[in-house]
Image (cartoon, rainbow, N blue to C red; front, side, top):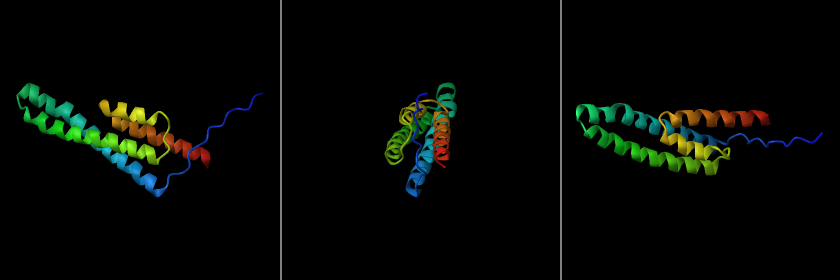
Length: 119
């Protein structure tokens, strides 16, 4: 029998890492919510009711939150040893409706499992 390779679990998060992860969660929720507002409210107002201002302001807000989310994702990835899939999944999630919410759940679940293995 061959020895099975062991996966090195992540160490528990420090207070700074935990705070960075919370910032990522908050920014993800803001970015995801702004995207849903843009798609679900602002675009129908523009194309069905002829109110283009809804897309103008919601779209601008979403664009700023989108860029901020990607920057915070990269900063958090440099502070926390994330799984290999995390950064590409975070970027992909930011492009899909409900993506940031699903990514946040999957990332936290993965980090939690990794920390539990170590205990």
